[in-house]
View 1: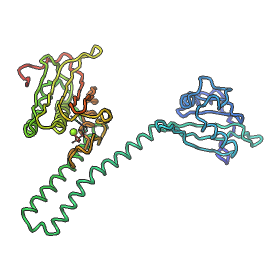
View 2 (view 1 turned 90 degrees about the vertical axis):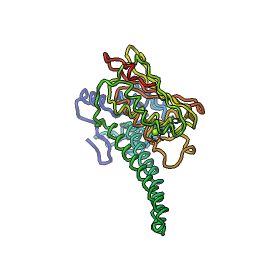
View 3 (view 1 turned 45 degrees about the horizontal axis):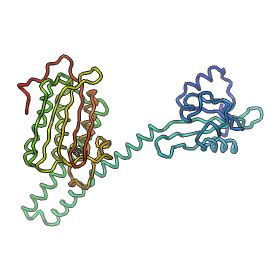
View 4 (view 1 turned 90 degrees about the horizontal axis):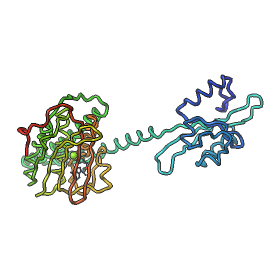
Length: 370
Ligand SMILES: Nc1ncnc2c1ncn2[C@@H]1O[C@H](COP(=O)(O)OP(=O)(O)OP(=O)(O)O)[C@@H](O)[C@H]1O
Ligand SMILES: [Mg+2]
């Protein structure tokens, strides 16, 4: 039962039931007496405060590394009211909210013990950060095209409309900016659909040559930039089990990136082969380029939404940094993995690992591209 100060009176619940109940809670519960001796702690509290297994009888100062727990207990004992404080670690990795409640003796009305309830809020905080970053990123990505369109429209209305040549050029530029925004919105919708697991996948045995061939649509772009685009598919590569269109899109995204980040005269190689991984047959598809590569610090982050390495190198309006996030989600939805390795200045290799379709025919050499 609660007291007017938000404290608790000693329960009349059967002790065994109460003990089981407290032990099964996800929140940590720690009870400390006025001398800072631990009277009890459930498993969650032991985990959150890194207490020894049976902490009963130990003094708080000796068993809890975080001195803020002692301050919290003192605050509660001194005021006789509930006190709350956050116990985030210095690296901001773990967020624990601690709520100390006085346990009041109903006979004397005095506070004899303090119950500390600990809630691990790390996941909630991380989601909040992701959401905040997401909104900030979307706004940032939209600001540039919106500002450009605004400027172009103002210039047109300010007189440029009367000059057909200039007007045509400006309207084309508006069209490009709108296309960029449209692509970003389409990518965002796709990403959220994949993330929510609502994206229908047509799972079927798919020849790797089909996936690799998806990159062929980019050949005109590679030619335009004087880049060699070649394929090396091992004929013994088994089929993969997955959605050919979606997986083809992954390969195309990777090749598109390779084209964007490889200077003229370079080359891009798409290769595929069978690999065995702990007794499972997998298919490995690699996209290797001879481009600018990716700095070690960026390597871990390129699969994050909106992440773009070395922004200074990039031209405004080019890409939103969503392609690899979509690729990762698609590959993972197939039970596969995607990774990257790179030596800055010497190029990058993206590796997609997909489960093979057991028993499916291997890639037919007839359909092999080279
Ligand atoms: N082959 C590559 N070589 C060098 N850097 C790369 C390569 N592929 C990706 N990156 C880096 O990773 C970042 C994220 O790539 P991602 O495909 O997600 O976004 P994007 O290509 O910039 O935009 P989008 O794919 O949405 O059009 C790129 O901006 C680039 O900095
Ligand atoms: Mg991309």
